[in-house]
Length: 119
Image (cartoon, rainbow, N blue to C red; front, side):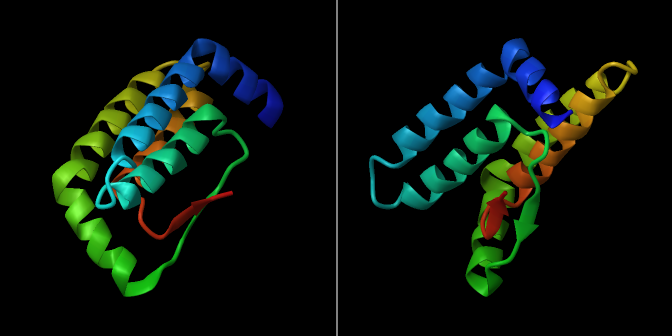
C-alpha cells in the first residue's frame, strides 16, 4: 500500500515539492552558515518525495533543542501552519485522508527539523 500511495503522491505533485525543497537545500548550502539549514531542507525533500511508510524519530539533545527554538520562530511556525491548513483541506474528503495524514507528518518535521531523522 505504501508503494501505491507514494506513486500517486509523486504524480499529484510530490515531485515538484521535493524538487523545491532540494533547490532550497542547495541555496542554503552555498554558505557555511546555511549548511545546517540546507541539511534540514534535504530532510524535507526526502520526506516530501515519498512520505508513505516513512517515520520520523527525534533526538539530538540540547544543540538540536536550541536550533529548533530559533527555527520555530524564524520559519518553522509558518511552514507548519501552511502544512496543517493543507492537511485539513485534504482530510475533508475520504479519499484525501491518507494524503492529509502524510501532510500532518510533514508539518511536524517542518516545526522541529533539527535532531530528527527520516527513516
